[in-house]
Length: 527
Image (cartoon, rainbow, N blue to C red; front, side):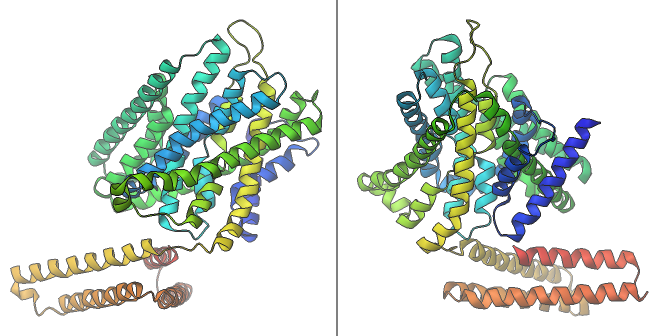
């Protein structure tokens, strides 16, 4: 009963902090970490112990699968080179740079432990990146690169972490074994995820029960992760692969009702998990501080500042050569891939927030080595990990909007342009199909409802043609004004429908049907 009260209290805190974050216009993970940190020092509150296996199993699979679901596979493939340079190259370089700095400055820290720390703090967090960038108006290509990086880099960091911990615990390390292990673990995780995705989609095609299907998508996220971990391959990549596979096949495997319900359920589930995990991160600091009380505050602050600066600085130093050097020597690359403006490269360099994966990896460190001695500097590694999360998430997250305004970066409108073109093609296809049906049955040609339907799609085609023309000529203000007017019109329709229900003119069933249509229209206009 006591545990249930704690969970309910945390959920209440998550909701309250998320409301405050929305009011003051900042990404809610930032406020949740700070709020959790403040709650951790409130006297009398029960101590919340965050077990690493709970984080990895309960939190990580659905969060990764959800992030993968909303990642465009086309954009991922189109930006594969910068994604891999960040997700593999930068993670390994950051691991080495942090290890060198920690070994040189922190008294008594051995090379193996330094590499453990480097592997833990090297991968940026998928959840933090998605939660923060979704509020910012940035070009779609930048979002695609950041989302793609955050999906892959966890596997790189955790594989490096696994071998670094083995070096500390067993006292041995092999570069060959580490390299081969990285390939096998990564490929194995992807194969498990794709297999799980194929099985899930096959099952969905046999069903027509939305609630069961939505539940299945949640369970398969966990199942793919568990199977991969039991096979000693990457559960992280398995969860990512199953999410991408589901998204690619959802249009033909899921019914419209299933897709709508799945989106609603996943959004709620992911919000609650996000909220809990970020507030729990903040709650950990008091216990961590108590474990390293023998070190002075100045020393700990110096160590934390050093590691945080290295983590941030290495990313900034890496992104510019990675973006431009290879283009100088590869003509085909220059022809195939557009050059990224320096302002956008700077933004990518500043977007490297750490989060749940780093903390879980730190807390998962073994208590002792094979020789029976305590794991060296375990509490200090956990503390430094927390500080890196706090600095990157809060400092970089809060300064991102300022940096975007200073760099004059704006959304390129590609998503809206593609949407209008798709709507035009869909309306033209509907017109063509309607004409085919009329040709097959001449009696339909003069039917009043058929004429009404024809005029409806003709009007849509005309509107979408005008919208595409406005976008091509850069006239985006008219489209923005049109959306505002459409929203106001939908509100007026809803008010009238509710008034008719209140007056007894229509019953609640009619209200719900009409309200459902108006809600769909409102959601479309909000996108």
